[in-house]
Length: 508
Image (cartoon, rainbow, N blue to C red; front, side, top):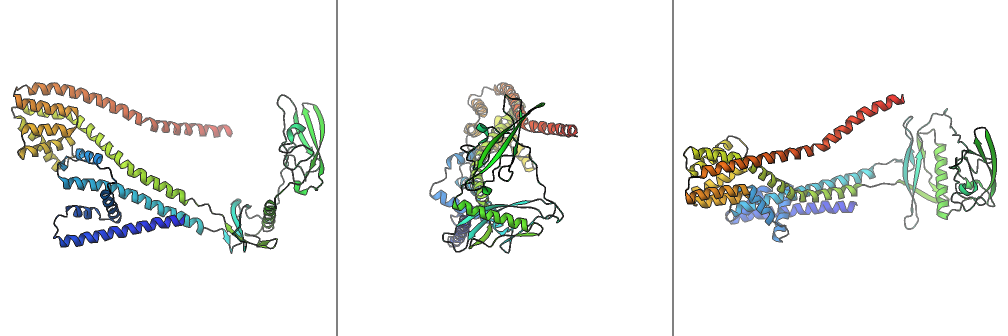
């Protein structure tokens, strides 16, 4: 895995060099051309203040040249969200560049963070060592409990680098006066057709027996006794290593008891040594040496691992579980998701813009009808509303999309565009049926001059307020749905706070 992490770092370094070289070439070209026809380059340099921004700008340039990015849909949404773009190609390219550079920068940042984190995990997992001088394991101090170690041994000099894994439990450091306690197990019950387990029959037993205590449908409790606990214990564990090759007979006694009734049955069992492969025998031998060494050094602060076995030198090392690859993969997936979610974020911004314009629609109609009713012309009323908003915005109030569109319409009127055409553009840019209807009302009043625009606006206001009430009701329902999950979590917390103390009080 470390090779992969190194390749990623190298690619980032190479990308940094290429982006830095591109920046220098752009600067030299600006000097030669006396800063003419370099608006795009200046925009790229302004956005490349940081290292990642420069790298993202370089990748954006490559993707643009090869037409990898699908920009038309994003371009349309940016035109809606930022009406000041208009028909200006330079502003359009600037906003589009800023959007994609931000997406690529976030993806690069997440991949780099994942690579750094994975590399750190990889290094830490290998720097942490529990073996002192290559063959000692430090015990936990008194009261710290035992610890389980995953070890790996390699036979020195063997071709192919043969390795074996071992799991060893190192008990905590004990006081010398402490005595080892032996657990007494209750005797289990046995029947010939049920207790043989994986063995073919009781006449040839090489693995554990299935000692049962009760047979369903019978009231008896069955206990077991063995005349040789060295070979078979009450739990059915078979120590076949201590048996002779020709087999040892062990008599198991099944004691059936029910109330005052008691009866015994004796079953002969022939125990044979287990059959091991050469590799299993060697591994078993190593485990025996490890257990003996651990028992020998029980009162020492460290455990010495064997140097050799059967003439073969052993080299011990800790078996490492490296999870850095999963972290790197997770961060790469996160980077891809963040990159793709930027489009969804832009879509959500579009939906928010539409909701805001719908909420502002009744207020706009009311103000427009008020000014028209006071005797102002349609153009003056339209411009007065827009310029009042502009003055408030200069004082620090937040931007509102519908009034931004009205300001853009006022700029069109000041530039000489016909009033009807400007209102038509206003309705198209808003991209909502309500504003399209409003623009048609304004255009109709200009063309026909019927003077009934106030009545038409009054009717439209009624409809707008009705739609706003429906929208408020819908938003309230959505808010209630979103609060459902937090309420369920709070209910779970309350239930835990009630049940846990009650449980402990009953236990006491």
